[in-house]
Amino acid sequence: MSNNITIIDPLYKEWVKELSLRYRKSQIKAAVKVNSEMLRFYWRLGYDIVQRKAETRWGGRFFHNLSTDLKYEIPNAACFSVTNLKYMKYFYEMFPESAICPQIGDKLKCAEFSPQVGDELQMQIFSVPWGHIKLLIDKFKKQPEKAQFFIRKIVNEGWSRDMLLNFISTDLSEREGKALTNFSTTLPAPMSDLAKEITKDPYNFAFTGITEKYNEYQLKQALMHNVTKFLLELGVGFAYVGKEHRLQIDTKEKFIDLLFYNLNLSCYYAVEVKIGDFDFPDMGQIQGYVVAVNHLLRKEGRDNPTIGLLICKSKNNTLAQYALEGSNQPIAISEYDLQRLYPENVKGMIPSIAEIEDAIIIPDIDE
Image 1 (cartoon, rainbow, N blue to C red):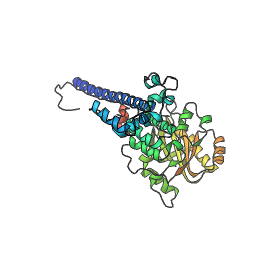
Image 2: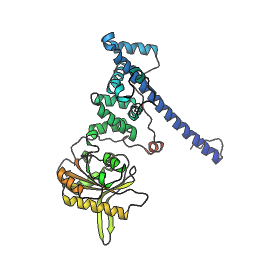
Image 3: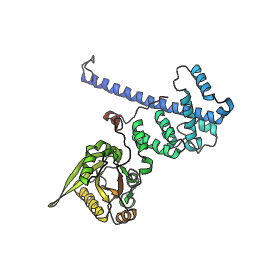
Image 4: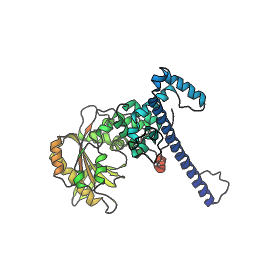
């Protein structure tokens, strides 16, 4: 709060602070609304281009001519470059009316839909920043189902463009939700589905920088030296509790490789990392840790059942499935991969404290 406030009264100062915060949030909401309306305009323009068969009707220089004419008619608009107009066409082609408002038969009515008409996907498509949309078009022009996957992640987790590019490069859509688990029989619904959804197989450990022969200790140390990237790979909502977390069980001491807490699921995650193939004794170890955490750390009424995550260099799926069927504790079994590309700079990929508190990411509506 500025020291230049003219009235010294603390109540007045607090009110001014509240007003400034309220104004900032109103600006953010206005920016979000403007972004949504612009995206609807872009989609409708793409719809017009396709439905009018504009390129065939008005020749090979159609986009150049339309760009020139729109810039002349609307000189203050910065969104009508040739490239941007083509992206608008691709935007419609990637998400035609059959995808975003399948319940409406009339194409024109669909092109003029209101937010109340469409389903959740429609609402999400028109709340993603235009720069993100263009990136998705570049990557998934012919794979709209993958674009939809990433749109949901952007909206639900507030990804920046850098973060989106990172997870596209690590094949997140092919890895997420793919771990072997017994969650459906050991966790209540809908927690079981949510817990399954945030698993990955394989986990991308390329950020450790390990390229030569290594042992288990070296891998765990590398993970902890890159804990920010490790949290990024685990997913949104994970908080780091500690490594080699000590559990005092009667006269015995046991140490969990890594302990996390998931804020979205309100539960502890006991994580064990193995550099070899999965085997039955590994299941016994992770089960014991899960039970111990439930007894020693979990608070009744605050925490849901603890989940165990076993990440191995490789696994036989049949062997892993047999082990999971024999367990009454919620366990996931995955592999890890050291070879996938990972960006060196993760700045901007994890929201700042201010962004988390506001819970709104200001969209960019650049061309």
